Length: 490
Image (cartoon, rainbow, N blue to C red; front, side, top):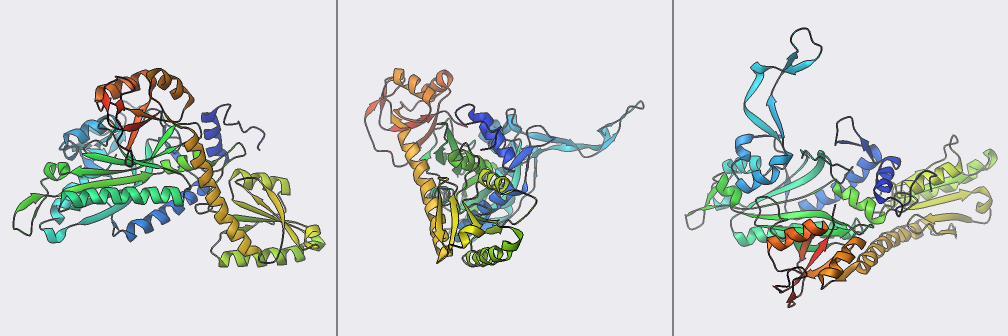
């Protein structure tokens, strides 16, 4: 462990911020609330992108790109939408600067270059896309439209934290148009399943699929489906959302289509997205007091090989190391042979451990005489000596085991911190300890708001697989028919 790296139990927030910077993932930029994603962090995001992009295309979606700037009048057309995002919008008012008057140094907006209509810097793209779709859709033959875009968005957050909440962030946003309500709802659920599959099978993060309460749903949606994950401090993190938008945006932008029965009807819509917030989820689910821990399927570097040899022994060690590297790469495993002489063995160990490389292999001249090498797993920090025979195959198996172990460890943690709570007294005690509280709720926004006001806990989701169960609301005592998940959240 790095000497000045704080432990999670001492200060979780500081632990997270330090890890992000020390592991070379990102750093704060000169622009308040924005971040620079460094090459190692961006390589992880690229791996996420590549896998998700493939999954989107396998479900029939195509990539497109829409403008960064949205006319203010477009934004004002859907009432709930504009109300939900108004406080976070950055607005462009002028298209040119000029030197200040009276000999002052600096620049100011040129009053002669004021825009006829102010432009909103994209916080999300529903409005500009649905204005575009009006020109694309005339009849049922033009449907469905299944588009996704990889983009940046701006939401002027006042309190920021790298990857979790920044004024500008990277994401993908899918926007689809359908002929029927049923088809649009099915699309929303399909994409939720895609996100859950990605989170669990690639990120090794167990998630709960659910639907948001009216207070928590996306501005302008009829239903918001989500996946919720639990971080190591017991807080929830919304890892992905898929929205059934009904006909709200179609009506706002007058997008109609001619049905097979020759009738004009409004189109049904969905939107869905995940962002670089997933990087935060990855860090806070798996990492430890020794630094970053990465699931092998997303790690930019899966195996590092480090030699220990004097000059006269180096040729023999190099031969074994390079042969192993070639065999691993033939299996699609990313490998680095770090034989740089300007860094000590101890420095290399600390560096790759802190960066979360899943497997470290040490090839020492002395051990090699006995046909042995040392393998260290990042997830358990377990070291073992192994022979050279079928080593590449054994490393491949170990990577799969690390992936599985990380998921099982996170699942066991979540299960242990998910508790049924039936009284307000227990609720107020348990929420201080963190975790998911399964509680009855009377279904009213008033109760939800009061619970949030008194405890800072929100309804994370109403689980899709929740059993019907009669009970009494944990706060009001009024009748309830199923439990929902309350938690404090990022």
